[in-house]
Every structure is written in C-alpha cells, then in structure tokens.
Amino acid sequence: DTGVSQDPRHKITKRGQNVTFRCDPISEHNRLYWYRQTLGQGPEFLTYFQNEAQLEKSRLLSDRFSAERPKGSFSTLEIQRTEQGDSAMYLCASSLAQGVYTEAFFGQGTRLTVV
Amino acid sequence: EDQVTQSPEALRLQEGESSSLNCSYTVSGLRGLFWYRQDPGKGPEFLFTLYSAGEEKEKERLKATLTKKESFLHITAPKPEDSATYLCAVLGSGNTGKLIFGQGTTLQVKP
Picture (cartoon, rainbow over the protein chains, first blue to last red):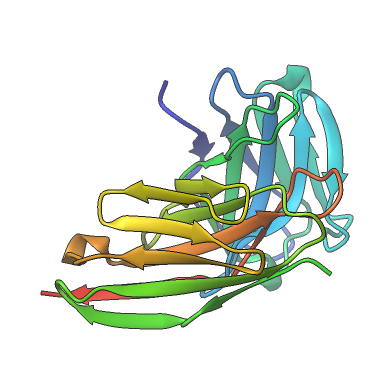
C-alpha cells in the first residue's frame, strides 16, 4: 500500500478559473476527508465521506466548493471561480471507521496558488 | 465550541535538550486526541492516538500523555531530525468524524 495519493501536487491558476483535485485513499479505508491548510495554521476541516455518502460539510465551505466520491473509491474536490483567498494547501486523509474512530492518514497535499 | 490550543507556537532547542509541547483542548466528551508531525510542504504524519486520561504512548524520543484538559508531547534528547511542526487534534463533539486541529508548535533542534 502506497498510502494516500493526491494529484496534482501543485497547481497555479488564474483568478476565476475552475480547478479540480483528486485523492486516492488507502484501499481498505472507508472514510475520506478533505482539509485546507494555510501558512502557520493547522488543517481546517472541509468535508468527509463514508463510502460514497458525504456525511458532513463545513459551514465555512462556500457554494463554489464541491466534492464527490463516486463508488466510494477516489474523491475529487472542485473549486469554481477561484479567488485569491482560495490559495492554500488542500489535504486529503483517509481512515477505517468500524464503530470506533481510528486515526486518519494524510496525503502530501495539493498546493493551490491563485494569481 | 470545540477548540484546541497549542503552546508554545515555536520552540528552539539545542540537540539533547529535552522539553515538552502543550495541547489544551475543549470538547464535549473526548473520543480521541491525536498527535501529528508535519514537515514543510508535506502532509501531516500520524504519531499517536490517546483516548482517555492517564494514557501514555511512546515512540523513539517522543512520549505523549493525556489529562482531562490537556495533552503533552515530551521530547527526550531531541536530534536535529526531530525539527518539524507538531500538530494536536481532537475529534469534534457529537458523532462527527472531523478533526479539530490546533495551530501547531514549530520545533527547531540545533546541533
């Protein structure tokens, strides 16, 4: 198992463009999470899935953000009409939830720069 | 409101100089406290999970402890390769699966 994989690692986009990130979780993990991290801060929760169901979405997440996890495998995070404030590291994590929560393992992140 | 506060924000140590990092938390019904290490430009790397007050976990030069209000990450005789940002997180209140992170402590160990 190679761990959580994120693609791309870096993305530079012009303001107003749409971007999409992909996350491949650890194969046996049924939960998948998206977090955002800005410089000097801890990761901030965006949303998470259990299998293909999106169970929770942060109130801070604007309508420009959407996430999917078709068939409960990989996930995509799309940001429409990007703004400079969207510049951040976008982190994906996965865990195995079987009644009791177990630790989440993170990918290397996608660094988004909006110019 | 669920909250995690870490102190200090930054810590500079000489190689071999032991110290502790603090994580204070406020959550209704702790279901888990987690420590991660993060190197610059990389994702957080899982270190420890603690579930109940009095619990301790060790890994090499690191030891994590937990009380009802805070957790400590003790670093014994650190080496330069221990330099990183250490993040503390708790599971949010209720039935959520989301983690609430502190802002992290950036540790620099000088040879």
